[in-house]
Image (cartoon, rainbow, N blue to C red):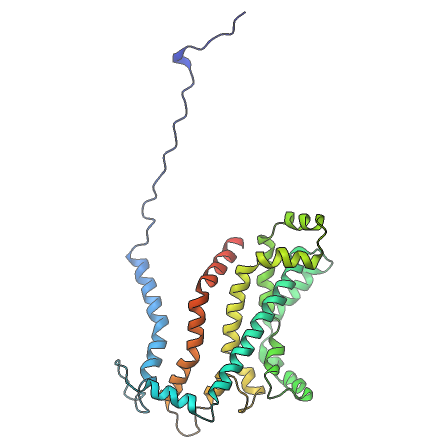
Length: 295
């Protein structure tokens, strides 16, 4: 018995290819560009105002002008050559301490975040909550016992007194834990264990490469925070061995403050950060976007 055949009129029609839909209005309008332009102008205004005052003289702060003066280089040289400021030593101390703190925070935060995210151990969640809770404790509460400790150790006045307390970061541990939980699949860990890799070898070969975008963002923010730190270095350091923010505070005398000199020094201390942003801007954006997507 032969199989029944379908007539051409009853044949199933072939599916039509889907047409791509064009989304209208996806391009930002002038309102969005206007808001972004206002935000950029508001962010750049403090730098411009500092340059206006820093390029003038001692009387510019009383009669400010929107036209820059011609004294910025002279004011900057005054800051650099001031023996009370010790500019080059302060610049080196700030760079050395900030770079070492950033590297240490990234390494220890990534290591702890890897343990909290991928290693199962008893009490891990409770310990992570405790680490996060330490961010609620103000830094000022630990200044007195910390100063007594470093005074007994004989570290007051040395750069080590500002490096050692900042070698770890609770925020860094929290940030890397949340990132590594989503960035590294458990299948990679199982494959590494099958190949005979130890836990630390797995961290070096799997965890660190995967955490590179988030680690770059954490390093940049830690470097900037350490560079601008004034409170604790002002307490524990002396005038002979200062960081840059502490050295610039010496430009202010008791009876008269030349704001053109002070703001010229402030702009000099900002230039290294601007150069850092120019070379690491892409890493910063990719780290923020990666953290937003993975989270």
